[in-house]
Length: 425
Image 1: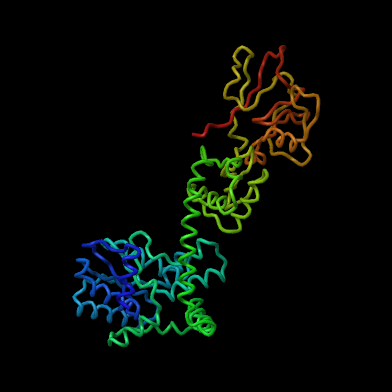
Image 2: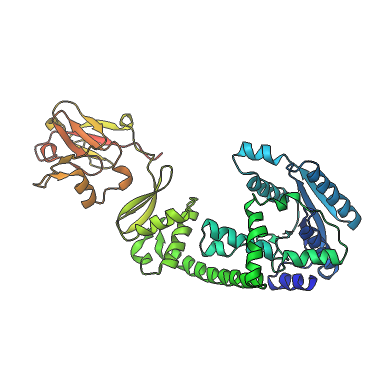
């Protein structure tokens, strides 16, 4: 078994001479075997070995006994141990997370506080198989099919190509003591259901199924790495000023397009799930908008996709209005203007209503606002804001678009009514 683990270490370049390695030790067979493995190669790589254990406060005395077992084991082995106890059920509830999810986060947060060059976890081949099956059942893509990576930053997994049964057999054959988690036999946990009921069925089909699935995961990783590298190159070509140029993007296959879109959203700190990815992919072929989360939308217009926050609609009392003499009027940084003396009654600003229309200045035709918006590529995120300017007679214009023919500024205009939006600051 040790030879297999050494091969994995060298295959993925997991260690450097003189590394300080933190081994995550739960007390189970996998983690105790992992600690023994590192002790066996300590001199070969000139390693400084330490260990970490977190007691989650989930299984009562059994959990505290695990912590005591790890403490005694490390003392006998001469390994420095970092240990921490938490109340995971209570803390998970406060954080609004599941206990398993919170416990995992708590472990890695704890590990990250300990000075080391590498963090070794005991994830093995069987864990990888379970992860793949779990993700396939829940829904995943090629990235998810890559399962547990052998190396992720400082985290290394030397047992990722060794099955859990092989590890346990090695412990038993070498009289290595370990703890058994009683919850491992509880099939109400998704992972346990896969391990206890599904994996035996796979073994009936083919005893070598774990190695075959491992080969598939390896191929998925190779394919994903290549596609991602191509997507990054395409991203650099098709994303400019934080907008995706659809003319450049749409010449590529969907495999590349999807990953460029994912990268774009990741770079904007927006999470994009499979459903939203499909919806954004749809608007690469047409104009439209897709709600991603809360007020965040993907907007497709003028041959580009961009992100917009539709929450930032301007309130009516935030507009700046002025009446200028024609000699004072410059026409710069003004969002709407018209002939003040042609306005009937008072001016109001409101949201658009179904059927709203006007005759744009200089055009002898009446248009609905919807058609005007589409013809002029009026920003989608602004269309439902306070943009329609009215007097007592009706609509006199749209902020940022046009004034109505009956109030347009002409050679006889003496006074100009203007509207300015508040600055971005």
